[in-house]
Length: 134
Image (cartoon, rainbow, N blue to C red):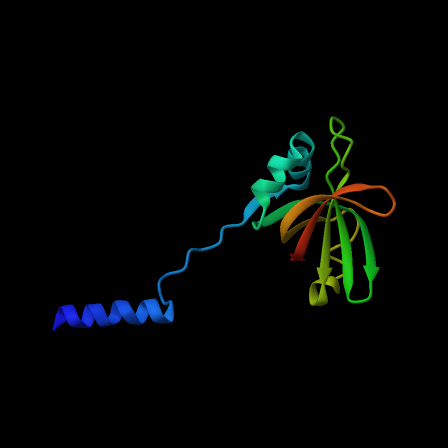
């Protein structure tokens, strides 16, 4: 009887997918270190962070608003690596509303994913982070 119950429980768990889920760990990194990784080896950095959630910390250098969104540029410039200057996070919805937190000069920590090198219309190279939130 016990074996039948255990087998039944196992089958139900497979069907309902009730097995414990792995906790998704965020990779914590400073904006300067993230930029260094992309400058040192863009291909390796892109692969390392592909489909990963990151927690990036740094000082806000620039903020730009658009309807329903806000772009926050976190200082990532390093004198030894002047190629990429910022980590750019685009916040949407409620996260885009808080003007004080994202003020220039404030230190922030944002969560996002899939960082990749990008070039803005003004020619500035950035490490763009998608799906950002506080």
